[in-house]
Length: 481
Image 1: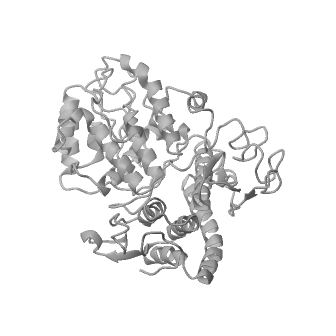
Image 2: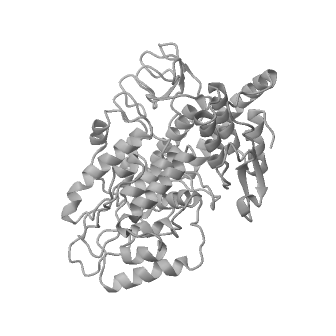
Image 3: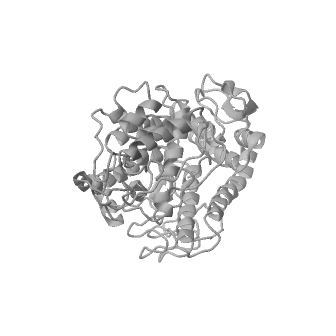
């Protein structure tokens, strides 16, 4: 998942974090571990800042004990529920932006183990109900040495079901797991945890300390046996306050259903469905399934494995990737590229390919660009011939790039038409572009062709930066800022 490499800089934040750590260490508490799932923490922090009505200083305070959390959330009365409040607000903000990856990170954050005073001590469960049912169904993992840890398996299954409900890969739930159990009474308080704010991926993954309470098979059984493919929900692009990106690469192999995954199905090839794939299925031709559907995935790169085919057929959700269906080609292609990225990262982490995981991020961008450029030339030409798209009940969806938007000192992206598209500014164009597409579909009631064109425009914009990104989005939709 993509996110900026640094947390939002806030005056006094460092001292606010460090002082609670020092005082709790003196009491022989379990060592801090709030930065164990650092990429998820960073992603949720960015989402929280999009709309933060309770003025919570930083998402990290949701993972601290109440005494320390109070310094970062002075307007929150029930600190036992701070982690849930943060996850709930982050999910709401991501949902408003049409950001499935952001919703995924909010779900994972809700399940991360919260700091407690000693090895074997469980944290207090929130006694309030979250606004979003996807968050309300989950509680935080408990210290693996505590008696309450017996419930961690149920928590991971609840996370998987919540992920499946938003169209994300349920196997990503394994990333919410916690550490191996430490020794109760350990005088060092160290247990088997880690805490490294500088490890962008998360030290629990880097140090191989992640200890899931359930298996992939148990997750697939709990959600009905469909892995749905990985990708959408694997990360979040940096939004307001962050411009750079990092990537979590600890997801499970893409699509572990009976007939999906990297060559795992009886009739499947690299991530292909039961009867589809680029010539790999028992009943499929080169990019064309026996049913007559066509693979519209244009990217041919295969680092860590080929991108799963994007089957184009008929019906209300005519596009499919590894069994998951989509209304637009853009959304399906994005999933395909993300699945390939995760498979590549898994291969890199396992030592099956050399060169690290950064090349997997590059390949994902190339995958999106290959599809965007191919389709952009075709759809822009057709659109110019037709003269205009149907934006439903809304006006111009153009995006501008400028300094001073929303009072920012730095340049950012924002819709020109704030009456119909009132998201506010963001430093990552994806945040604004995906919100625009979601609004066109849900509120504006734009045509299906327009929504698909918007999805493609968003992909095209993400292949560029600055003014060029805004120009790519606007050009694809035939509008001007």
